[in-house]
Image (tube, rainbow, N blue to C red):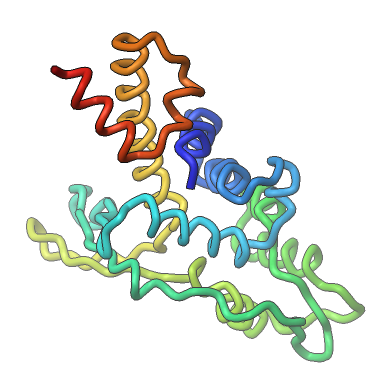
Length: 221
């Protein structure tokens, strides 16, 4: 993963919500334009985001933050990255004789503000690739099996009120925290090396991490 890609993902994702950040991060790390990224199914998108998260974090466990449903306090939950499911090999999906595709980020963008029933009906219409309407509940189960990283639920007990909070895990949210941290570190390195040697940002980002770290130590005296 290139340092420049991290900065592109951070710059384009700043000020956006989780869904749009997922699209911009996928575009940056998979080398496609944003329109193509929005048209990519969620299984492919989340596989790329999960791989990027594992690479950027450099750790087997990251911390996700959730709001307690009982008292509203922030809960820090350890997330084992190795336990997060990778998507199964791509295959033709079918239910009740109706072939269908997984939803894309653009499909999910269109259901913002809809009720659960409206959203499901809209996605069924968007994703069906033949005549007929498969059972909605069973369709959701097949879809989750094909895109497991998009259907992980985390449970945590609040130490203050003892309420159990269950929340959907969003790989894009976890990745964004890593992207933001790495981007700010990179910008600090660029500032120091540019000030010390007069190099451009492109020159500095083209250096490998070890060479950048060595020059930083030298610049610090």
